[in-house]
Image: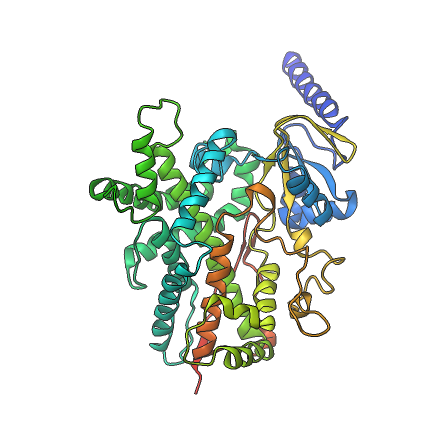
Length: 488
């Protein structure tokens, strides 16, 4: 018994001095407990609210322990911009993300590092541009999908309807068109099940169970609980990607690549004699899986929040519709260039993305070398977490940061104005590769729908709660039924 007490005491002392030694040159923060780190505070207060609270106490840079893992948290626009833009090459690597590391095995676009990441990003940007991203040619498939939405909503004749799953399918169709050359109907039960499972997985990732896995991955990997469902829920989507890759391999025409997968397969053939190449089938599957999951989830959540915001604020909806009627009319299809003549709508779309704050913490980065930042020494490989919500809700940049306010993006003459605090796509070289596609989708989807419908809640707008159901990795939108009333 004495020996056991001695061993435990020694281990606790060892952990204590390890923390003291690590902390001596890192930014300040709450003192961690051995093994647990700051878990008890995170659990009692909630991850996102606790991180925000700490930024108010310790300032724009502090250290938090996820179990035994120290993570430097950055808050506020000046600090995040300095790290990810001004010193972008230093804060370039992807940091520790146990759940996603297990899912992607450090492959794909978002979760690889070094030369592999550089090649994947360059190839993806070039290929997606070749298939229209950022160009006028991409308008047609987005407009086509928006029209499918119109036809679908018409079937309900103004009856209350929860659009969440339909919007998941609609936004994913734009992505699958680029990546896999396919489109799914809204009554495709198998595909809708895959999307619903993906949404449930994100719910668990953002819950306490998901946070526990990220804090104690070595333990939680072996313990039963809802966190184990994450991998099961996402497996059908991964299998759908694998099946699409196999199908493309059988039908590939080198003279006529149809989509991203075809282009990647051609690159695989070109480099088949290069034993060190990153262009291989496992990396293709991981990259498509990664881009689909991230792009579709963020866009569908943003559109869902936008629909609910329109229903909650009828006066804002009426102003957007008035501008649509004046600039586009109710019959002509909108075009990307119309946005330049629609300052109120443009401001509305920006405010949706700011207010919905879909990924409030961004994704962890890590330092590529030792660096002194704000007077603190960050060794190579230090995990760095950007608290993006502190930028999107910075009171020095946004007059009413916790309210939905169009004037955040309008000047005194009601002209659209840019705001440095608009950072929903993160910043620097690891910012979202599909930013231009998301912007196009949002503009076309909202203008087409508001040409044809007025959105109304089933309760008094003041009682219509649009608060997220979970706030962690993602701010997950609630489920509501709303009415799509045809405009006369």
